[in-house]
Length: 349
Image 1: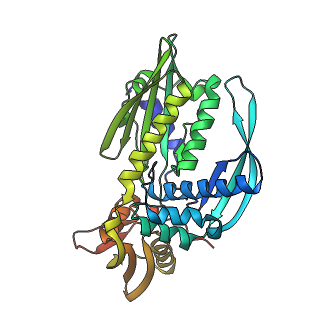
Image 2: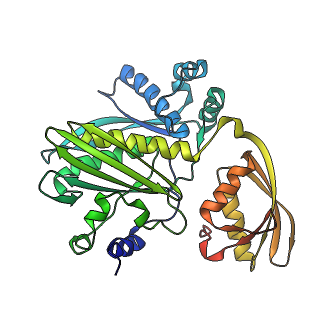
Image 3: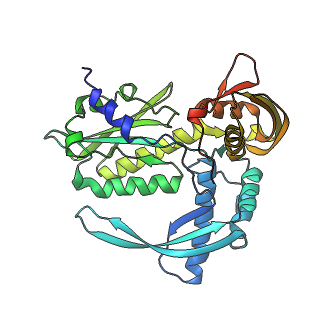
């Protein structure tokens, strides 16, 4: 039996394979109170966060369009509200943090992105699965419970960056099957990817070396692998810095460059449609892609339909999306695709 059998079996059961919807027009920032002055600065900070989620950039470039947008942030606002965020502390207690949640007008945000020439991180974002192994000098453990405050903080940072993050949800019996030596080695290629293609798997191996934490990150997604190290005296700071680097990498990999944005068209033929239900699912899939602005039916015959798509980016990105989803399988005939009924998303009633 292969040594990674336990992990393979567990991941098959645990991982979600679908793309996650990210609210790209909502920002959430901490504020001191609900005063007008604090709200004004909070709305501006929330708008910056929205632009960061759209582009995937941690630092936005200086640009006159950004200055104008910040000066008019309140006019771009659709709604706002306050919520109390409970932050876990290292001693096991929780502290309350007041946050402003601001929702902005999509057309206004999209225009700022265009005016600034920002890349566009596609809204179909697949989750990254994060495994964290900790060694304090007395043995390696998978996500020790005493660091629950750190896992909560990482989930919060990932959400605010627009990176879908998921954790292995294992009970005691399942934990015993996990090969910690395999994880510690950072062998992401030994962890199976989900069938429809996740954003990847990352292993963070954190070792205490005297007063310093040395955290080694290994990422694997498809044919891409990379890694980095973070050193800090505070484990939480090292983990948050590493997670931000992960978001930087995934966003850059999956973003559309500014020069590829614009008005494009693409005609494709889909075969293997067994009837009205398949046609409805195929149409819903195409219309649901963020790259697609409009869908027209050019012709229909036995088991196949010819579609004409209006796109907001070069067709290369559409073909890349087809390859990730595997709902439409490429054939040897260029723009002809075969309908994969078993991979199709359910059509809403």
